[in-house]
Image (cartoon, rainbow, N blue to C red; front, top):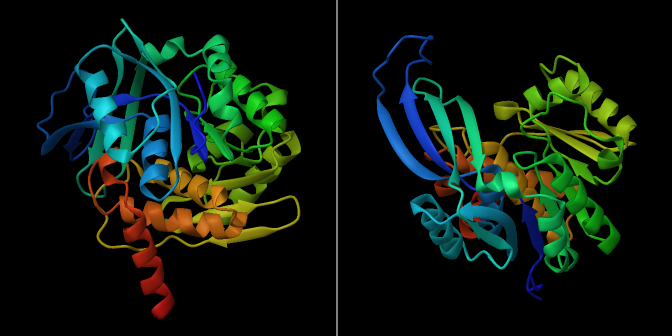
Length: 316
């Protein structure tokens, strides 16, 4: 895989076709419920974040594996429309990943089950083949829907090349992550649930989020941003604590892609050289717009929309 000189942000992660069901609640075991809506869309954390990043203004490369099937075709079309460099995408005879997404029709909250499919084959060797793409980027970001060893290798290459490294520990693993991984992360971005699982702290607000962030910094993370849903985010550095307010962009419809929107926007702003606090504020606007529309990749706003929202807030 060769590096594009235009790449600013490189993502390692998976694509999954999102099978999204809206209903009043999750069914109990053995129970059948009638839903109020159903949709198939493009998802997977790595792909979602890459789309959010590209649509919010960065030049993006994505490293992943997909199948030679209809869901794989959906992935390629999604990335083409977003303008994402796909030199780091490998095709496989295994099926493309898929996700079951339950969306609560009353409040837009969600629950998700993911099968990575072909992306399970993302390993250290795969990442090494993409070394040039990673090394060419100003920012490198990854998550945990692909194997931990691959994420670790990507962070190693990015750190050695001088890139800013962003790690989204999602889904939070049952086993402890390697100590070396934390020391490779300039910014770690968990949500409340992930922060709780990683630290043992019951994250129920900014104070608890700061306590959890301190534990992650003690593990070796450079900085931590704990996203708090409608309550914004808590930015913790080794020397400072800052609350990043949520951005209200309209009626909430679907929170499924909000975390990925935040990370995509964060990476765009970091690639532009903004401070971490400014980047988090920009990311909050990207996330705020994403929850006003259904879907994951389909909900990611454009740079024009983000700048318009931020400009309108400044004029108030």
